Amino acid sequence: MKSFKDICIKQNVVDYLNNIEKKALLIYSPTSSEKINLLNRLDNEKLILLSTHITDIDIDKINNYIKSNNIDIELVIGFGGGTAIDIAKYIGNTIEKKVVAIPSMLSTNVYSTDKVLMIEKNKLYTLDSKLPDLIVFDEELLKKSSIENLYGFADVLTIYTASKDWVISNEHKEDDMDKDIYEMDIELLNDTMQYILNNSYETIKNDIFKMFNFIGTVGHITNLYGSGRPVSGSEHIFAKSLEQRVLVPHGISVALGIIIMSLYQNNYTQEIEKCFEKLKIFDYADKYNITKKLIINNLEELKPRDGRYTVVNYINKKDEKIRQRIEEILKKFKISD
Image (cartoon, rainbow, N blue to C red; front, top):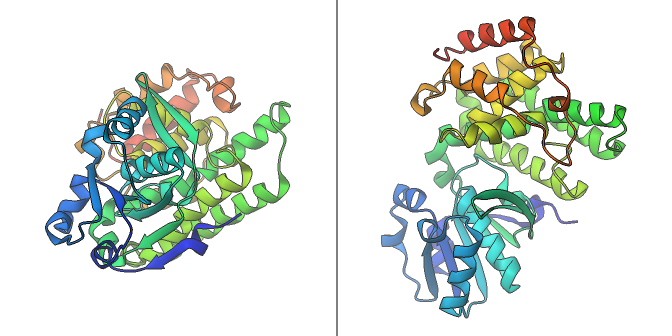
């Protein structure tokens, strides 16, 4: 199986797009394109433009766009964050055309997976798709999204709780363990935590390619295993539930999930806390209306996910000792009441 590292080129995004010789559909994020004034810098008549605001990740809207426009293209390009690249992968897989991913931020590992997140009838689903055929890495572009990039580290640190959930599931005879994948999981987690703990905030923020590799490797592990089981557990269940209550970056919601679920796993350590402190993951939590009350309400109403056995399946959400620890940690991270 190809790794994202095998299909990556380093190039200025505008130069790449202006030199495309095939008729191509460019799905772009308006927010990302404005950061570099992309639309005014494009000079290629072979590009058909589609804003992510037109379809979002709604399957019906995307399929209607494909049918109504009778798309005659050779290439599908996604420029932006998770939404743009997921739409490109979905369309490319549907019409059997090559896909190019141009990440404008590293907040997710969407550029390195063969899965897509789609909405159908107001529900989110993870669907099989395809790995991009090419990834264009533009370091200067990615530097413009430094905060969002750092949020992407939270999706690597999910291994902290997801791997423990995998062990729990195996002990309860719900899932078999893949020893090789599990060892790859733990090696990536340890390497990432040591990197964060041993380097300054400025070093981490500015080493874009290192970040690209850490975050992309999570997607590669998912591809190798065939599902998100090794890297997605109770923390993602918590995060998905929280994201349905409030519009919040995935990095913040999943980091909260890691903190809270690791307490219920009896797995919480100072090292994971220090990683989030170093990355300043919660510095903008108030901006997204993240409060202690919201977090506790989300926890109390949390339900297990079908087909994925985790600590959520059996925890006592009203355990007073754990509840007290949660409140202490949230206070330390300056999460308001």
